[in-house]
Image (cartoon, rainbow, N blue to C red; front, side, top):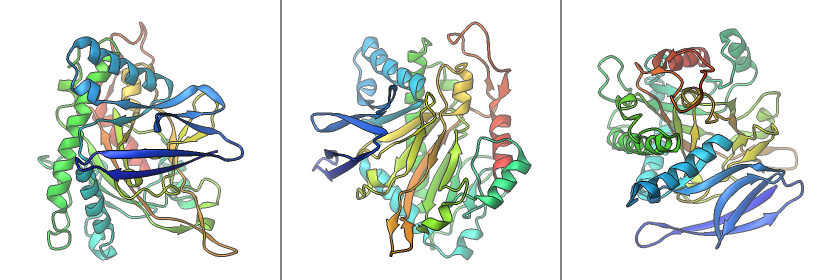
Length: 382
């Protein structure tokens, strides 16, 4: 593999300065190519057709012409066709904002278990609340019995807090008391809105890249039926992750349109050995490490956007398998880590059918977005 050491510091203006150092290790399967010391693409060294590029989205957001927008849009859609994943810099969400959200998230997971369990996740139609370690088992299976067996044999070693739109008339968020988590609610709601706004912009670029009118998706995603997931991966002995099928989070694809992933080592102090996101190369079946790159958000295509595009865009399998550290001669531990995922969804009343620019024949029947997502969540949790 290729080992990456990145030192990052904040400039006076709050932007990241990055220095990337590459170290070759035996059996290299992953490569990172750089220009002027900045990482520009993560690739599979054994397959030139697989790449996860770093895209400067500021060029889209501040474009002075339709041609400038289209150039960035084409870069994004080309990457979504190849690997289904991109790194995005110039996304417009300040680093300090994300760091503050990480800190509030960390404080929440430090609360006593009995406090968190008062907020326990209850219903897939809501998809809100605290999920204790081992309750979820992400997988590609849609069979409830099979997933139950997987969960019993190889549960995901993580806990999470799920947050939805706060104005929903039927399903309410489950907030800790302000005295238990000061500023948690206000910080998460502001961040939720920032992520939605970015989602709208990225979907506009997707529309242009697919030959659609720029605002094609606007009215199909404006109800903000998204899910903000705070994730905590506690430190755990490596021996507990070595059984068949064990992982921090098993191989899976996401359900909606896009996922925005914020990695802790990108927005907090960078720790090279902590990370763990791996993306499956659809051409070879091998997994490629999506190494954290300072100042960037990892964005990937979900199942419904792939379905919408008639599989022109890839919804790619990925997993989390954190590296281990040695404790003593006989035991190692995987270090704790945090991440934040914003799962972007279409409006739950949206009908997902083949886009007019994505082929003469639809591969899939029309599906209701809400029914699809709720169905997947129903079999994922106990």
